[in-house]
Image (cartoon, rainbow, N blue to C red; front, side):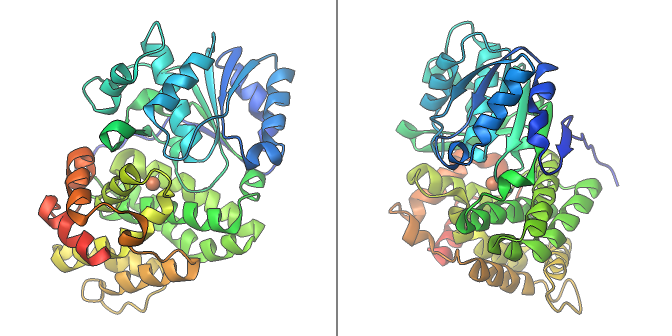
Length: 388
Ligand SMILES: [Fe+2]
């Protein structure tokens, strides 16, 4: 056995009510914060007020950017940077989109003297420029699904090129994360289902990815057990289950940080690139079972055995992990049906399977290369035709 593993440097403060600590935590990194959030439920529930009060009490000035759309664009990032003033620390209060904008803004604020153009920032998203510096980040997740509060990745969309890409580097790992499940309690049922399914995908993808290692294996399996035990009850509103999903999501972030994602996320990003209004969790739900089927049918013995273990964590009746690996596909389909998020690719997007396969192969090549079974454009097309 031979592997490299870097644990994310994030200090995690976990517990109900701990959002009150955001001021003191943020003050360690700077005295002028850019707070990135969304306009919706967070403000209505008063969490933004809680954060701003805590920052004020700790003597931290705050500028709020609240226009982060779902599937945020590079133009959103440039807007956030123009809002930031003299920010020396960036606070992300939100699910995936605000956190992606916050990370991207932290990168841009440290890397450009003036707000960058879309083209200039795209150099980072496309991988042409290395992520070498960013303002310190503090993440307060409001959903339990992205793992983004402890991982180095940001996802941005460039609408004119229909490109939705993930990029990142160590500077984008938040210094601190405050995981307060009282905030995630406010998620409506559907958001709990869709974001929880994202965490499930990060975990099962990391467990089979080529980039897997023995340490993320342990995190992924434990996370999958928690998802199996808690995701359905979390959707029903159980506070205890929402605590467990916040743990599963954090484990998923650790996994993503080193093991990465596979063809499932590559295809979901292609769908998001064509239809920016489609929630990430829905796009994942439309392809996850077919990617698992493709990998089980074409995978080597180790890949099959791993899908057998995933099925076992999902309580499937496994007698032989390798031979019974196809039960993983059934377990995926059952979970998707139980969560009420069953959907086909064709219901989500007008783009053809050919267009989606080409998009995924072009912009998400790191994820397709990380798939346990070769996933070239023609293979992605085969999966999409089944899922369409
Ligand atoms: Fe994801």
